[in-house]
Image (cartoon, rainbow, N blue to C red; front, side):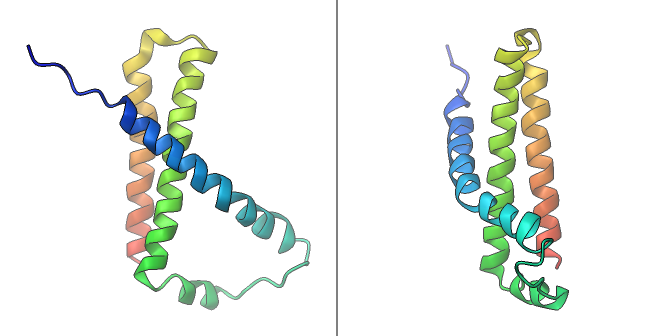
Length: 117
């Protein structure tokens, strides 16, 4: 009898990697773009400078990984919030498809956007 492949370790790996990446980079980005620039503590860089910074492929790849891992971290956390917090175990499969499908779709959209800069 063949057993079904168990994907839970894969999702937990993406959750862990997304948590680490988000914990290191998102607070700095939120501080910079949410407080420092709007309050005038730091001068806002020009659009051309941002565009120039995103031109090297490794930089676009790093930004894409930040977005993708953060989305999969969100998807896994939201999935278990719905399961455990709201006790929606009855809809286990549709919730997983919705959460991970959303993360995957938004990751592809971000990748498409980053590759076509």
